Amino acid sequence: MMSGGGYSALDDPKASGSVPAATGPDPQTIKFTESNLQTFPPSEAKGKISGAYRPPTDSDDTFSSKVGGGGGGRGSDGGSDDAAQGGWFRMFSVAAYKPYFDVDTSDVVERIWESVFPFRGNFTEKTSDKPDLYGPFWTCTTLIFFAASIATFVTYLSHKWHKKEWTYDINLVTWSAGLFYGYVTFVPLGLYVILKYFSAPAGLVQLWCLYGYSLFIFIPASLLSIVPIEIFRWVIAGVAGFMSATFVAVNLRAHILNSGERWFLIVAGIFLLQLGLAVLLKLYFFTITV
Image (tube, rainbow, N blue to C red):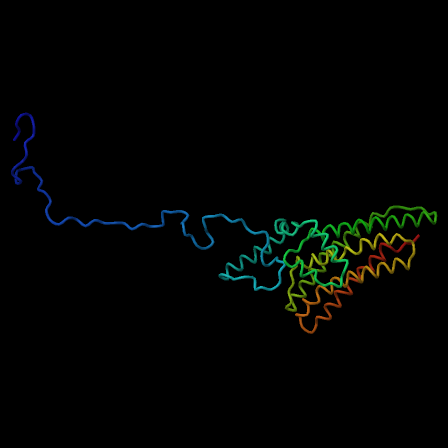
């Protein structure tokens, strides 16, 4: 069996302790197909999960300036409900208002200039793509301090003219802020609900933009109210109120025509409410009693 310290081959396949060689056809080779399960994220991912991250938008269709358009395509009911719910929650966040403060000075000046010429009626058309809240906010804030400070100054002059003791009324600032901030916030909000009820919905931000710029005409009117002539102050308040009311009514008239036969009542209500603001401004701030 062994020779020369090495191992000799086994010639007899039936020898004790040997293992016979396997005979027969070659075994079938098993091949595994490639799968995408091991690739994450998938290279052709579909649906809401994708390889690239996209930050959420600041505003959605629920909080939009554009009217109509059907709100784009919708997926499942659950997805649309989640989007709408998220939109209304974002309405109360600061991020939702950031796009509406991204405006150039030239745009603000142009829109202020449009409010001085109320009969053009193209303000809503020019601002439909990009309404802003920057101009309305500063217009309203400037009017608050102008009205309060000029009313205080006029009262001071009247008391000094009649040689009466004068005391500063801090309530002028608080009442002015409550009046103008409240008016420019809640009146467009109420109009938004009314127009939605009459199937003529308008963008809420666009209504805020329109009403905010409509108050600009009261700033020069407040300056002219320094003149100590009562009839002149009434004329100034009336002209400013008429121009402001016409600016809002003319720009909304074309849109409100879609609400049916009651469009005239809505426009008349808008006009009279704006005139009422002018009368209230005159009675509270520029009616001097000594």
